[in-house]
Amino acid sequence: MFMRDVKCRIATIIPARNEEKFIGETLIALLNQDIDNNKIIVINDGSEDKTKEVVNSFPNIDLINIENRGFDAHGTPNLAKVINRGIEKLLPDVIYDYIMILGSDHILPSNYVKNIIAHMDQNKDIAICSGQIKNEKSKVPRGSGRIVRSDFWKTIGLQYPLKFGFETYLLIKAQQIGYRVNVLNDLISLTSRPTRKSYKKETYISYGKSLKALGYIRLYSAGRIGLLSLKNPKGAIYMLQGYTSNDIDLYEEDLRSFLRYIQYIKLKQYIKSFLFR
Image (cartoon, rainbow, N blue to C red; front, side, top):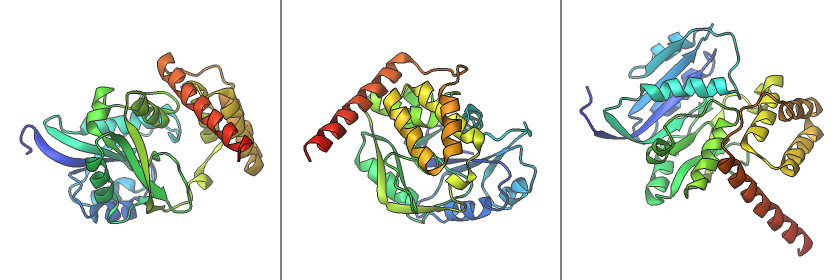
């Protein structure tokens, strides 16, 4: 049993639904990290395959089984609810420096956790950090593979909000209160399946709702939907459907205003660079 106020480095939370084909490889890579994962929690989100059995074949991994609720949580506030179940499982008597959220098909190189923690230890103003997925060029920390500084997350409640755009919310909130977020571009991980090929109609609708909930300016939202239409017209239509929905729980106005402020600055910088290049 842990003693009160034991200092641990990191806890990892993995939501999983029908992931028997992928989660074993993910757990092997996680257990082979150059730095120990002090706690690994898998939330079995009503799987109807052998996800539970695969996870139970690994020692020292906490498994939370949630009943089958009959939905795909990806991209919706339901996924936030699933991840929050894992956060609630963290022992209150143990202090974790960092919390990592990891997808069940996400395979990390052995130096992933060690390198990010070393980077964040040296830069106390970084609240959230991740590496890159192979063949992707994310400019902000991804939802899967992101490592979050516990001290920051605790200041805003140590939970994801049950709203669309909850992953982006954490990034914006960190910057709003004075932290930075960062991506280590030379730290490359893999996913067992291409990210966008798993997207469904509901995923694109959720992204549209996220744009509106977070307060993205209309010009940015239109541009995002327009770019998607060049590659996936149906996805763009679904995204627009989500953005124009009226059943969206909006975030607090101060956060929405902060995001709009950031976007206007970036837009001005882009226009200036375009005109004077």
